[in-house]
Length: 248
Image (cartoon, rainbow, N blue to C red; front, side, top):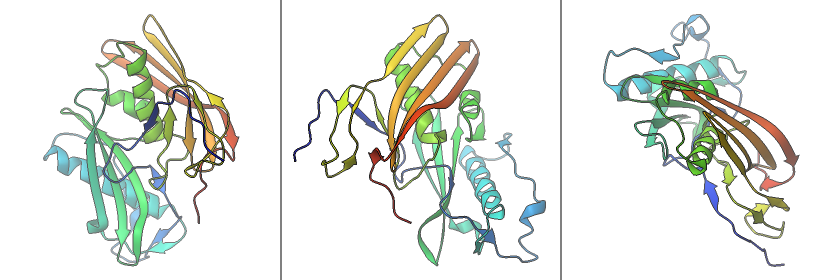
C-alpha cells in the first residue's frame, strides 16, 4: 500500500546535533558512597554571571542530571565527565540558545539521562516548563502566525509531555494525510494547525507525532513588553498514532 501525503510541511524538531529531551530514559540511583551525597545537595535552576556562559550552562546541566539520578531507583555510577553537551540556536527567538546535556557511562553506550537548558547573553536556565522558556525570551514576541507556530514547536520539543531524544516530536504545521502503511509512520487522519493572534496574545493548536502517540498541544503566548508568558498543555491525544513506538 502506498502512502498518500497532501500539502505536508513537517517541522522535525531536531535543533541539536544529538536530538534532545528532558528526562531520564531509565530510573536510577547513583552509587551510595561518601563522595556522592546527592540527596542533600542543592541544585540551582539559574546561574548568575560568574564564569563563561558555556561553563555556566554545563554546570546547570550537570546539576540537573545528577538530581534526576538521585531521584531514581536504579544504581548508576556518577561521573560528571560523562555529561556531554550539545548546543544550537533557536530558529525564532534571536539570541536564545538551547543546550542538551546527555549522561553516558562506560557501561551504557546510549544516553542514560537527559536535561535541557536555555541561555541568552544575560542568563542561563534549566528548561522544565514553558514558563522557564518565557523567562529567557522576555523581549521577544511573534510578528506573525508563522513565528508563533515555530516558537510553540520549539516549546513542544523542549518541554513537551514526554520528550525522548531517540524519537524527537514531529510537529505538523499544515494539513497532512498519512496512512499506517508508510514505512516511517503509524498514523492516519487529517490534521491542521490553528493559529490566532489577537492583540498581545497568540494561541496555537497543533498536532505533534511522538513515540506511539499523537498529541494535540495548546500553546498560548502573551506579551506585554518586556514581559512574556507562555503556557503549553495537551489538549487531545490519540494513542497508537504517531511515530512507531519505541522499544524498551
